[in-house]
Length: 304
Ligand SMILES: CC(=O)CC(=O)SCCNC(=O)CCNC(=O)[C@H](O)C(C)(C)COP(=O)(O)OP(=O)(O)OC[C@H]1O[C@@H](n2cnc3c(N)ncnc32)[C@H](O)[C@@H]1OP(=O)(O)O
Ligand SMILES: NC(=O)C1=CN([C@@H]2O[C@H](COP(=O)(O)OP(=O)(O)OC[C@H]3O[C@@H](n4cnc5c(N)ncnc54)[C@H](O)[C@@H]3O)[C@@H](O)[C@H]2O)C=CC1
Image (cartoon, rainbow, N blue to C red; front, side):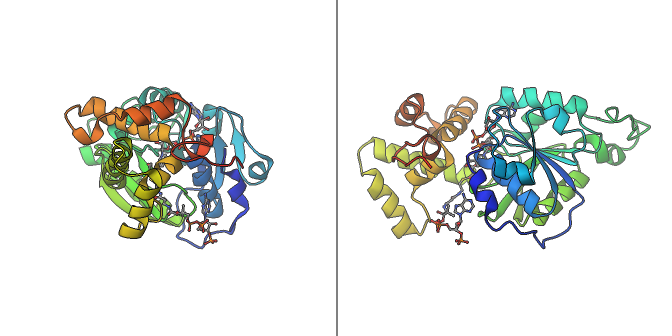
């Protein structure tokens, strides 16, 4: 919950588009989840924030309901946005739990940076009609278009860090995401003030497919000793107009998250040189140097 201090800033109700979603549950209250909870609350939605670490701060409690039990927090949710650790097994465990308790109409979304939405959603039942006792469709053999209206209330909602500032939301359509679910996710994204783009369920979607290899190449450049960290960052800021250099950005995103992404892609695509493990990145993470959140990565940071 390290970003809750920012909740006091600009906390005005957004005049953005109205969304059909009124109750949002955000699971994972770290770097991303706290920002997602903030923008939804700013848009006037009822937000429940769940974290298993019980690291809530008083400021947040005043505006956003908090909970440590994902199941209890999902009973009334129209939309659940998952922003927990980037690990398939842990995400599967969570979604299995949610699937058993969430109302039949609840949309499930993951904020994953790099994992497949199809794979994450594979543990969710194809038809969730029984959780609230409402039969969503009477005839399972009916025409596919009718069936698919309810088939997959699951998609990707990929935000960018820092969530309150970055204007983009990638809305990811899995193979089974229904048109209704997709349209509602797009509408909700606009309601929380984001510009939405649509992408297929491919590794890294759009931004990370381009950004992560770029960051990885910068780490390799530094590892080889071709330039100092500072010079690499200054070069990309002044030579290419980026707001942050790649190593600063790696620290900002979290070196553990960068490593989770690369490791996952490397195991799926072992021949791809851009996804190969980086010894320096692995060493920093094994030393607990995770970037801004731990106080040290490629640079040192003062703890707030
Ligand atoms: C890994 C993934 O899956 C996907 C990802 O997220 S990849 C990462 C994507 N993010 C980026 O690339 C970030 C690149 N960096 C930037 O855009 C900018 O450096 C930055 C927006 C983070 C900071 O901007 P800056 O101009 O250097 O600093 P600063 O002047 O302090 O901040 C600019 C504004 O943002 C606000 N801001 C900065 N950090 C904030 C935060 N964490 N929360 C809320 N507001 C914040 C500041 O209050 C300031 O607002 P005002 O203009 O209203 O005063
Ligand atoms: N860091 C970044 O820049 C971005 C990260 N993401 C993705 O967002 C997700 C979260 O990333 P961060 O916020 O950076 O991580 P983080 O480590 O800051 O936060 C994760 C939070 O989830 C909590 N958590 C873990 N397992 C849980 C569970 N089973 N139930 C409830 N809470 C649990 C942890 O206590 C922690 O507070 C990951 O999938 C990541 O890939 C997406 C966009 C950008």
